[in-house]
Image (cartoon, rainbow, N blue to C red; front, side):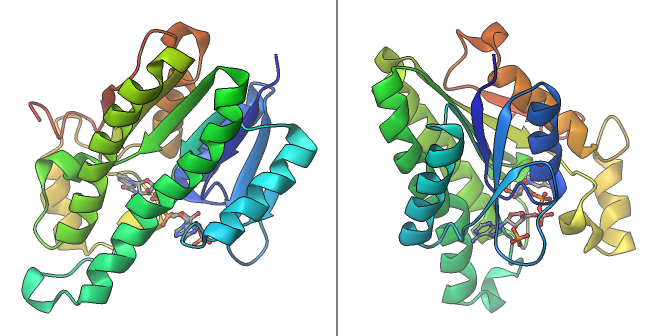
Length: 234
Ligand code: NDP
């Protein structure tokens, strides 16, 4: 059965791998993008998740073409790494506004259709550093840790409506975000990863697809690490 899926930030990186995984399985996949040419093969809707009006417009467009969103993957996110001493208030609030409040905006709007349908799957893309912490990433880690409390609260609030909320916490993945790290940073990171390598985006996508599948029908409020063992025990 073809389901209506929305992946925020599905135009590149991990989000694109997630969008492809659903499309390959025959689902109707919408992705958001902010600028440039979005990839082919999806319903691409222009949307900045920091803007409630743009989120509303994106959902209207998706609903007209694919019907209400049944599976939401809140993947869009940014980082503005800086030591606390040098971190501006804007560095902090913009990361929280995108990663956490942006997630709130898209989840809240998706919930409308899911409540009506009396079913839904929501998967939030957090990060291993949300629970592990990371020097120079206090803003990013705080926003990603908060996603867990958000998802678990909604799992309780909306479980009786057959809507599940789960979190995937990737470790380091080979994308634009990690390519910005210096060689020294990369060597130090990989020394901490039991599997000794970065994840491929497809490995994150596989966990997301599982959480949206019938096989995961009794899983809600879970945090699934896909981190090569980096965050073990957290
Ligand atoms: P990229 O930097 O490659 O892509 C980020 C995506 O988010 C882009 O599609 C971008 O859109 C979108 N985005 C950012 N801000 C907004 C916004 N305000 N509105 C709409 N879309 C926005 O990141 P990754 O693919 O590496 O990361 C995807 C997710 O996975 C993020 O949430 C990240 O925190 C998380 N993650 C990544 C890890 C990694 O190692 N890469 C590890 C753990 C978690 P645009 O193209 O328009 O900029």
